[in-house]
Amino acid sequence: MRTIIIALNLALLVLFPLSWFAPLMRAGLLPLFGLSEISVITGLQSLWESDPALALAVTFMAVFAPMLKTLGLALIHFRLLVPGLLPVLGWLGKLAMADVFLIALYIVLACRGLRIGVRQPADYGMLLAIGVTAILAVQAIVIMAGDLALIPITGITLPFVSYGGSSVVINFVLLGI
Image (cartoon, rainbow, N blue to C red):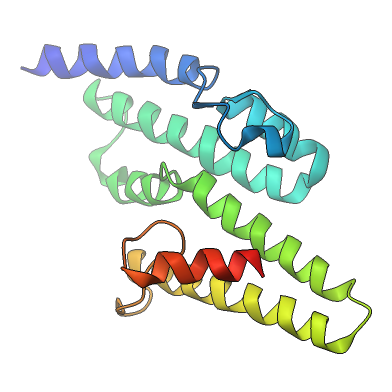
């Protein structure tokens, strides 16, 4: 059994970097973003061009943190690393969630919404854009903080993801505004 776990860890160490180049999604909404297909690497490239600070955070969470976690687990299985470092690897795992691109999309949505609000000539348009952005951003922040056990989990839904009946419809209406 131990050899199977070691073999799977080695396979993961090799296949994980290869997955960064595999297409995640084709067509769909991507023409709106100027891409025909997107992979982790092409997504990071386009993010580096538009927002380097966010790209640095996403690069750490999507590329380095998962690889460090996988490497750390492999070193523990090979008995080259002490098992006392498992809590550290657990935190790396929380940082390296597969949903890091979803988090990045919420950050981009919030930044773009605030930018649209600031550029509005009338106060009404500014308040409307910033208010809609705040509604979506606060919902996302509360759910993410609850997932990380920073606050108690509430009954609100994660915008555009959680199935909450009319919540999804209202979120898209807010996005349309």
